[in-house]
Image (cartoon, one colour):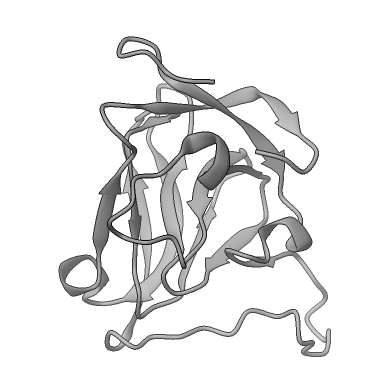
Length: 175
């Protein structure tokens, strides 16, 4: 579906599963304290300097976006600290920085349920956290101290397009 200048293109959010999210990163789910390490656990990379773990406060900004960002040298971990779902739009790390995104082909929206973290592979393009509602939200964010200063590339969606995540529906495995 092509977006007109006044109407954003909609993306239906997929249900978050480790398999569906694997091309973009890892899903961290609740587990017992004594659970053994397994190959599916997230392996973090901080090539941009010492890690920075903080609580990121975001104002309400809705479910729309017009660009994605990526960090080539770090694994970024994100998760809401409240009990509400949120959304993340991602594109593969190998998407060329000079080629605009084709929303229907390149972008994948995920609904992130409460008590889940996502860890992005280095280079994964992303928009979000996205959420509806009038109140600010707080997210756990783990990246390097200088990620947004020296390891951040931004790419606009092709042309003057704008996309919006359809938070009322979920696609079982699509986008």
